[in-house]
Figure 1 (tube, one colour):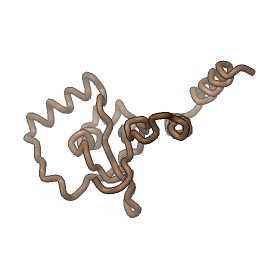
Figure 2 (cartoon, helix red, strand yellow; figure 1 turned 180 degrees about the vertical axis):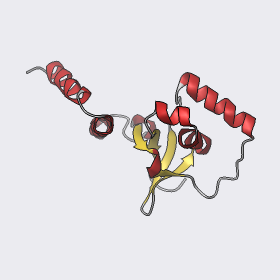
Figure 3 (cartoon, one colour; figure 1 turned 180 degrees about the horizontal axis):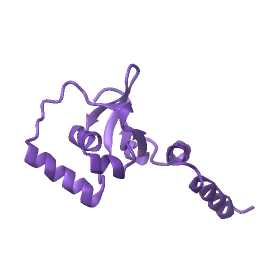
Length: 131
């Protein structure tokens, strides 16, 4: 069996899964490719979709955005999708802590239309160590 045929079969099999299993399988494939990627030292090489409950805001973000600007961000994401992932770091106690993308995180969690569109997941990259 050729590599292309194997990839096509893999994709067909994934397409039959329920949404959570499909996202899990896609994330596993991305992580496997990331292991052999020549760009594996770059966090953006591996954007994963993570349940929004597993992502939490840091408690040191001094940035605040007025409601009109938050609405503009929501409209931007609604129109164009997430064009930048949320940068996180692993946190043993809670999951993934946001170190960049605090407001994109909020939109994905607080805006029902966006949450529905992205099935309750958020696009994240993970940075090793403290920001």
